[in-house]
Amino acid sequence: MPYRFLPTDDGRFRLGLESAERDLLRTLPQQVAQLLQDPTDPDVARVFPTAYVEDEAAEAEYRSLMGPELLQAHQQALDTMVATVGGDMIDEEQLHRWLGGLEVLRLVLGTQLQITEETELPEPDLADPRSMHLALYGYLTALQDEAVRALSGLLPEVSDDDDGG
Image 1 (tube, rainbow, N blue to C red):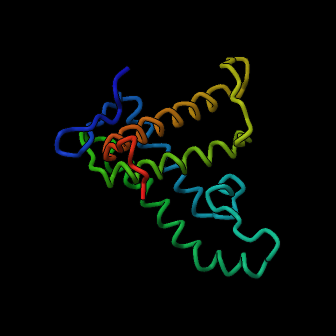
Image 2: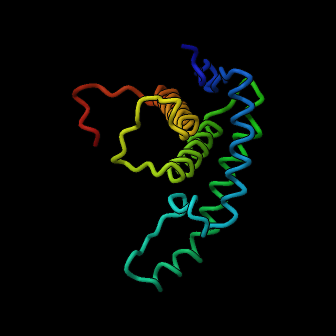
Image 3: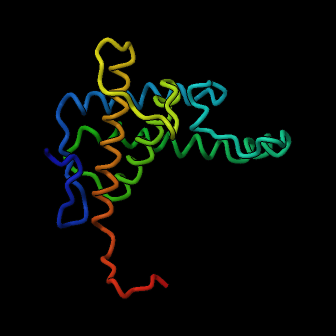
C-alpha cells in the first residue's frame, strides 16, 4: 500500500494520492464548507457540538463567543485541503490542518449516516443504498489514521524509564 503522507528528511510530507483521490479531496471539502455556513443544519450538528445541554443561556453565550472561531478553524482546515491537494508536498502545519479537515468531513458524513461511537460499520454490501457513503466514511477514516501515523513519526522517542514528567 502506498503511503499517502510520506515523511521526508526536511520535515515535510510527500502526498501519495491518486488522481481520483485528489479530485474527491478537492470537491468534498468544498461541499462540506457550504454546509458549515448554516450551523443549525442537522448535518453539521457534531461539528458544532452543544457545550451546555441544560443551560440555554450559557449555550447561547458559548455559541456567540466560540461559533465564529470554530467556523473559521473548520473553514481554514477545509481550505488548506483544497489548496494543497494538487501539490506534491505539504508541511507539518498543513498536515495538521488536513487532520482537522478530515475530522470535519468524517463528522458530517457520520452524522448523515447516523454513525455514532458505538456503531460497528457493516461489511460492504452493494445492495445497501448507503454502501458508497459508508465506503467513503471508511476511506476518510483510513486517511485520517495515515495522517496521524505520519505525524506521530515526528514525535521524539521516549525511553522505557522516562516517567513523562
